[in-house]
Image (tube, rainbow, N blue to C red; front, top):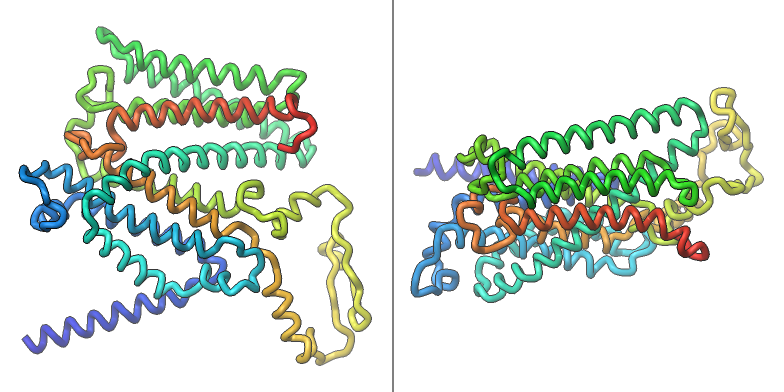
Length: 449
């Protein structure tokens, strides 16, 4: 007994030291990755509790307050929602705290990038505390999560449009034949993949001998959108590019597939049910991994977006505004020598006169550090945390099938008619937003888009 106690103490001490080492290694540049890791951890915890917490929760009197004990699926869903609520509150509190942070000199900038040991402890306490809340609060959170998930999907679409237009502008900006050929090749590949994908959807989701008019409608509507994208983008009045149209077409077809694949496994028009009647660990792992990658990409992309999150005073926003203009003027100080390099002819280097002298005098070190801290932040910290808050709601809906009445579909990630319509409507919203991004500058020439 004494040896086992000593061994447990040693293991706990080693674990604490390891956690302290990892947390101390999180720098300013890796903070966003750390937030993504914390969010991924919350999904893993939700998944584990979804599988193992039901027997324990049935014994908790403040959760199991029913005269007739609900099904096991109800407790599995409740566990996921409670972890999601804790995650939502954690990031919402951080978002509220970061409102108005404009420069790195703000003390809250250190809170955003540091204090990770305290953040992890607070996150754990919040998640644990959620399991002591009454069922009414969890039911209310489930209701608002459906709307929050819709906002998250809308943000995903806006980020995709921002990314595609930025990609196109960058390659066109090179104004070289190679990049124009690359644009054409990528666009052709995307369109070929879109139409090939549609053929597979017809094969798997409109089997012969079955009345699958709804699935046929979804696929045909997506194909019509793909043709409309190309026609509108290449219209002389629009003078657009085929690359964004092809990428958005492929994304809409993927959303159509995602929606059709979310149909219940006992639905006769879902050809995938023949291959996935049994739920395997690999299926659950793949579904969860897809969810994590989707959410993490949205958060990271939101943190680096030049149009959504960058405050007007940020360096990134300034660069976007000044690109293609006269550039920046460098002031030449008296004790500095400015020269160019044969290796980098367009670059200017600063060399201090006098051998053995430091680059900056000691009396100016503090001034230099003060200027560094006075730099504006490169993205909105508050909106960055809102992304994770909404993503917490979205991931909870995926893991619970968008409803507490999960039934047999509750054993799968993102399966059920609610998931189908969410995916299909998201595809239609993507189409509308893309067409609007093309027509808005023509309809409202005096506004900036």
